[in-house]
Length: 517
Image (cartoon, rainbow, N blue to C red; front, top):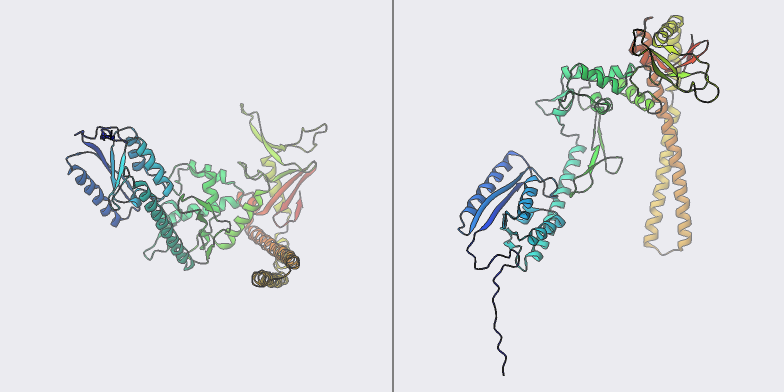
């Protein structure tokens, strides 16, 4: 007998498990997104919302759920798109059967994100319709088309990112940049788009720099500004160590601008890292009016560097500056009689009771330190001291021979580097003995590293001398204005450290000179 095959039609939708002949309406949502929050994009955004609302409601077999939206958000990642995430969450909860959106690029420009989300929605019975490409994800060809279109969208995003990056670097190379004035202390945006000093805020900036040079730590400065109710650059009530530290190290305040301090790792994650030389930087000198003079700013940078290697991070101007003359350890502050009227703060060697033998150096009060400082000022011949410092300054800053040596070494380094490059190119073009080539390459690399190390050592010596010269300049200025009374600014400008002995104090000045009282 001949076989008789009868087809039994499917009655359920494979994805939704709903009866195919069912007359129930599909629950439909729209998704709209624009990638920037500029005014011209706002019209596009509102038009998308209005269009999908009417589009969905115009179908009798569809039930309108909502139009989910994201404004001013990039599509390269779905991580920060709250509207998108809420839509997916509602779909997985069974509240949406179909999502309608303009195009694959509106949905996601990251291929992995796009396919992962589509498959997750498909498993839970939610279809996505991309209107521009006419792709229905439940269609047999849907995923293939979606993969191709998502890859194209991702490549488009990469291309746009590269163009934006090139544009930014061109802008930087021309000395042009933008600044977040709402979170920047001391400057406003002028009519020509350039920085204009905000005198009220500039007074706060000058105070921060002056307090730091007087010996105050960023922690102390932050605490003082908070107590006085002065708002931070971001308008907050509480200052932090980090905020003060950023003000102190920002070259903008001396009229210059360093551009491209950070860079984006890739166009998908948008994560940014501090630029340590991975991409070019651009330094614009004398770009705008300075709030802090360049010599003062550089003195602050020297002091910040100096304090890295000591304990000058405490809450007093004396922190990190008092040392034991017997064991060399730093002095720390101790509170005696903390809960009675005889309370006082003393400074004592931190290692006084360490080991079998305790240090014989005495504890000392802040008043005794101040009186010792005043005695040092009285016994010092200021005119002679200033004359000596000027001689030292002239000697320290006479480094023309070092500049010539540096230039010579850099020339040698460049020449060796060029030979190295030529060897590599020659080896790529001409067949030669590879053992001999590797030997020449190793010799050139060794020579390059040697000359480079010498050039860097000379550069370090020049910078050391410049730093020393700035300290001497600061000390000369302090001595010229000095009276015989203790002031915090004079203390911060003059004293590198104080060493405590049984019979007195030795003040080491910022010039390196020692004075015993």
